[in-house]
Amino acid sequence: MERQFDEELRALKEKLLRMAALAEESINYAVSGLMDRNEGLAHKVFEVEEQINRLDIEIDQKCFELLALKQPMARDLRLIVSADRIGRELERIGDQAVNIAQRALEILKFPALKPLIDLPRLAGLAQDMVRDSINAFVNRDDNLAREICKRDDEVDTLNNQIFRELLTYMMQDPRNIERAVDLILVGRHLERVADHSTNISEDVIYLVKGKSIKHHCETRDFSET
Amino acid sequence: MERQFDEELRALKEKLLRMAALAEESINYAVSGLMDRNEGLAHKVFEVEEQINRLDIEIDQKCFELLALKQPMARDLRLIVSADRIGRELERIGDQAVNIAQRALEILKFPALKPLIDLPRLAGLAQDMVRDSINAFVNRDDNLAREICKRDDEVDTLNNQIFRELLTYMMQDPRNIERAVDLILVGRHLERVADHSTNISEDVIYLVKGKSIKHHCETRDFSET
Image 1 (cartoon, rainbow over the protein chains, first blue to last red):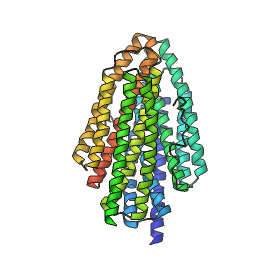
Image 2: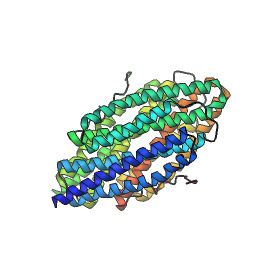
Image 3: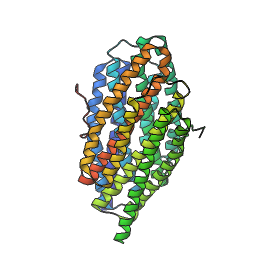
């Protein structure tokens, strides 16, 4: 009985790993579509999204089944609750990739505004955060999880820099405005991917430590409040 | 024993209701701060956020406790899993209010770009969705929940209209660009509030029907895929 339960937990973790790999792949397609000006790559995101959504429903059901039928205690219970939460974050990372792909398809209707340098860097940071947060989950590595939370600031800083640069393009020539706004939104979507990875990392810390560090992990700047 | 459990479930629901009321209040402060050009109102959002975060942690702990100690079955289990998920959505609605307040404080540094008409309408739609989705949860009203999911399209359409209008302001005069971009981002944050309410509505349908309708509720336009 117990071995069967362990087997089911292992299968659950594997589903999450697969979902994380798809989420990462999906961002990759979306950003490469934009960078290489390749609509086909952007369209692949919609295919991957369907696979992500199927896995999302499977994970939901599996978590509920394990909670209902096995009545797990303490450590296993935390694992299942975390898996449920992490599944939802990955699903939303997939949604962000869809948003980026949709933006990319808009952007590709017009000539390139500028060579994109910081945006792929931002995408790289966000993708690393997705991958590492899932590794932290699988290896129950709360130190890695804490480190990922800190990277969120780096992402925000780089995105702000991208934002400021694109503003200058808009100021220079109104014909740049639409494309620049679309690129700003791509930056925002990547920032959201990083946010979701931070949420996953917080879930990992909860899983390992049994305590929530939410609302402490982030070092937001509310200096005036 | 059973009555005590019912009592605890009731208390959990009440916490969620309080959290929802705070989330709504928070959006109200953020948007009113922007509309009335009142920094004090925008700053109130940061105070409310702390209350929301405290409730979020309390709900997390309560859900886990109920899962661990009471080993609930079927219907109660679904209620607790849903409460856990809905708490997380409300917490993020609070985060969006913080984002709007931060934008508002930026926007208030400069004279008003234009009279804001559609943005408060968008805010109203988003706030109604928050309130109604929690009512759907409390009353286990899956019909209301389904109806809320549909409203998400209305929000997207209105936000796109706002976006297009602000683009024209940017084209007219580069001095409008920064403020217009900030207003575009406020629109995006409100759209996210509506998304979170849609997620809550999906959770309500799961709670009532015992089946996930995720990825069907949304009628996204992937016409080319």
